[in-house]
Image (tube, rainbow, N blue to C red):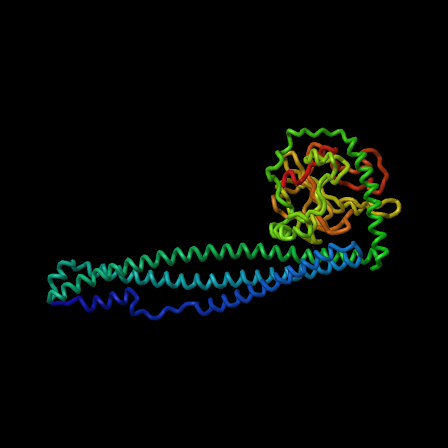
Length: 451
């Protein structure tokens, strides 16, 4: 009489992996990678503490009198802070690459496990096919003893259970593999974002150094020359504002309030990154607000009574303090209506047109335009389509700016023109030939009504 019990048991054990050789994994390599990731994180934490300390120094310098020394100190501290931020980003890039490496090792392990499970399942299916050629009832009847019959039945049950277990393991491993591959995709996307951030940060350092060098060249590193430059800017700005108000009052443009977006809906995003705005929210004691605003819109009784409209005697936007080279983002999707640089225009005495400096204006198709001025660099061009959050350029202190900041304005599209003062009525002042946005008085809107 043929006994199937013992051979079938060995087949079952082999198929279910009981006697299989130990599987080699990448566990040790993955552990080494994790150690490196942890070390990178410690470095990031240390650098972020340095960045916070530099920010306190910057805030302290900003509270002092505006002198050449304080301005240069601020620029130098900004460069040190940017250098630390670059190191943080480089560490994050290294960690992202290590994370991808770790996930790749995990994927290799899971692919090996899947191959092993498939082999085991195939072996078990072959064994079942072979044993099923002799029906279970025949095997039981052919058993030498009742004990052999019970063992034969139990072995068949174990074989089926082992098969079910391998199938379950295969499904679990496949799910984990898909998850790991999704994580690799996310890590690669994060890596691309970090690399773009690093490029911007390096450009910020260059813009900051260029501004410092230009300032030292203009002033010959003399405090008296610096104060003379400030006085010149103030005089030029006063003359420009006087001529501009005359022009604004004569523009034959009508603004229909009903065509403007409803206020208070949060239509616009802040023109800086969420990380920058979060930093502002932590510095309320410095600015007296959560948004790094150094000058509000209007500041006149008219503006107070009608906060959505500019009167012509106050500030036609808001100023947001930002280190030179800070990326400036589009507040809403739209099209670049125009760009310009008023610093390129000089009067007969050789003085610059100290107004907007480098500027960008977007038109949004919903009745409003947005304005971004005093930039150090412009990254977009006329007619270009942009999306919310897209970088338009880098902040600076071009034009009439005695400190680095962004002038952010909101205009009614109907009441806005891109022109020069000379084009309108033959103005001859220093800014006569500077191209810039000009609007009728009621076209200037309070940005805070839409942020």
